[in-house]
Image 1 (cartoon, rainbow, N blue to C red):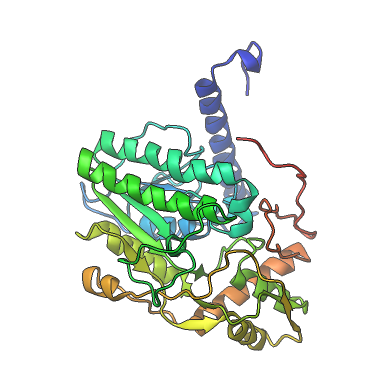
Image 2: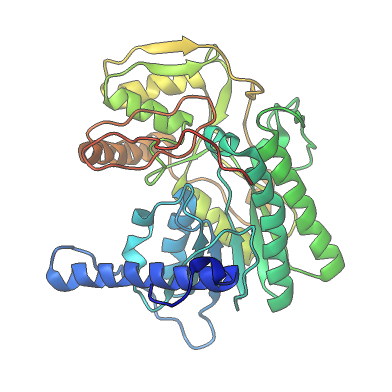
Length: 397
């Protein structure tokens, strides 16, 4: 970056703009250089050519993350113009590398807790760490992302008259006393527990959505997402699917926190993305559960993964984590009736694809050390090495 004067003398907005511009340009040039030199097999996936006026300008916050990048793929191939904003805390450049430099795609390195001025037709607001170790690493920042970040996106939606979808979570139900969970259930959340920064953050984010709908006539959609898995999951996100697969593939102990009798419902990422798109473009505006009612105990799920990977790992029980929900299963009646959605990919089929993805990750890295239940920042990938956390202290916000 070439300019005169000290960096400290540059206004923050101007500095951020310069950094964004330079980072984005470097990414594009690197991508083009790889293609021109033949050192990369990078080719843009085919996209649909939409008639004039049908291509939307769509903003995806958190678009370089696990779910966000799959959503970006669907929107891009459908022929829309997509803008991703991401602060890259849990996002990975490799998840959206296939679109860098495409005329319909733009990546902006930006944190949603800061306002941004854009012209868009739709906003998918996904930005927020979803893994307990990641969102507990900096609970204040997690709360800010769900509150200030959501307010900023709602302000943008109001200014440009865009429809906005919030990816909320099954965590709004807390440790549920109703099973399965319907959208009408108000939840059982510990407001001062270690998970509260995420649970309560999402609950107030939903409140904000409907406040803007009633007071400012913003078109809103709310998806309550249950456990989701698939390729591009962060290898160290510390959740059941990634940890179990990585441990099984490396022949390490498959670690379960608690007695393993707690239940979870797992949906494949492609099904979730389909649900998000249907919800965004349908007429229903109240919260909708998006999840797979196929329920497993965590112990049975570990046994399933051990079998699918042909692993000799031992399943090991460790002390339970605080406020870990005992049961989690969505009632998706509303999704079936209102947006004509239900999961299509069987869990075993999705796991097979996910196992193959993590097998390739291991081939590249040499070893992956799974994240435990304690708060931790996302560990950075190091080719032919170990994912290492180079920070010993939490950032203050």
